[in-house]
Length: 131
Image (cartoon, rainbow, N blue to C red; front, side):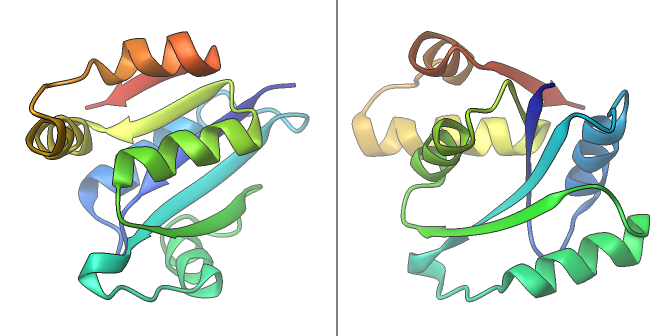
């Protein structure tokens, strides 16, 4: 059994769609699929879990997934926290999100972290970038 955390935007974007598709590839009944949206406090977003689930199911039909909406200021921190909380084996993020994560954290800290290395080192989690 493995746990895959799929990060998406709301409303769903083309990147979100590809990321969910990738998460569903090879998904087995014993596996856990978690769809995560981080609702950024500084943007005033207030997305409910039900709205996220409805949006995903409108695109994909009913899928074997758990839906989580986290509120936070720092996108990367929220993703890492949720990956740790869920004990995720894989974290999937869209290609464009990876660049935004690096730029945002780079501006915040004055450096450009290697997100893959940090997740692998701190959580023993594999990060996959979906094109």
